[in-house]
Length: 184
Image 1 (cartoon, helix red, strand yellow):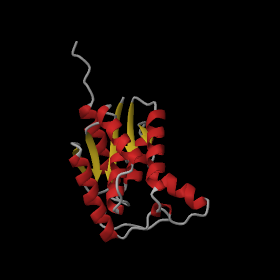
Image 2: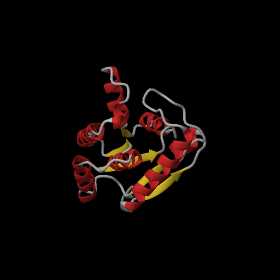
Image 3: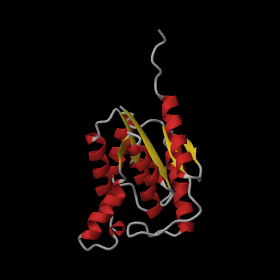
Image 4: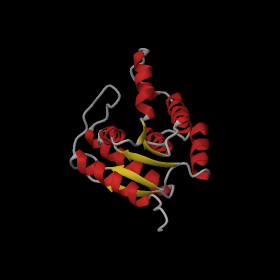
């Protein structure tokens, strides 16, 4: 299986790219943190990201989704490396579940070493799950970049721009990385 990751700061357009890829027939996996936040908020918890168990819940959902995905080529909206970046951003120690998951994905080479780094759009629209200012999102973007690089991933820059061009950059990169059939 080939598993690619889209990463970047909140509000950079990763979900829009992922939805476009899905329409093109790619296997996609949605972001886990947003789902964890939505579930907690539906149960009346306004800011689930303020408790350390939040990270463990994200890791568990990321792992489950990764293990359940069956397409031969998959694109993930974030990975456990993004959860490491979130932990760093929050100023928390890396919990054992995250450390174990980072070790597993590294040892098993779960994700492709090329990661799509979706650059910010010059603004960050708040949502129920995204309450970060644009200035803070830029710091968070840098933490993501540093986290992936420190673990040896190659970042493929997806600059700000129209959605079609961003999607084309992702699909062209994936197509170029796929093995070519042998010549007859």
